Image (cartoon, rainbow, N blue to C red):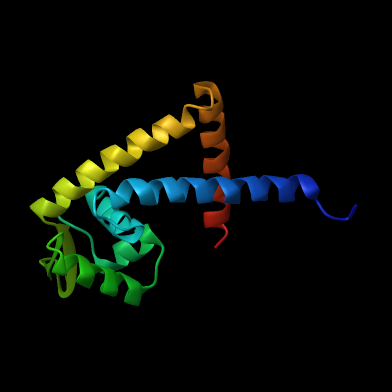
Length: 150
């Protein structure tokens, strides 16, 4: 109906957005069974994915979770109250702090991430393994282009 619009691109974006909604709904359901919100999972996952048990600084969490500084502070405060993380002075920077998982936080993220992986593997099983690899490579390429253009 509108020949000047790039409809294949619009169709692709619409499908990605719709799929993301289904993935998020599924993830919310799985995480609810582990008494976690998506944002809690994101922060705990970022801490678990850190290269060592040294923890992460708030600025590293900000980059990993793609939220603003004040949002990271608020989220860490809420996770502190639930005894899922600690906030400790950074030994290499007397002005900085490091956020670390507690034993309860590590146990919670390990259980939740296993459940999320199982649920998402079942969903992606609808797509042949070869196609999953192709889609992963294409999305990695696209994300890299978008993230490097900032």
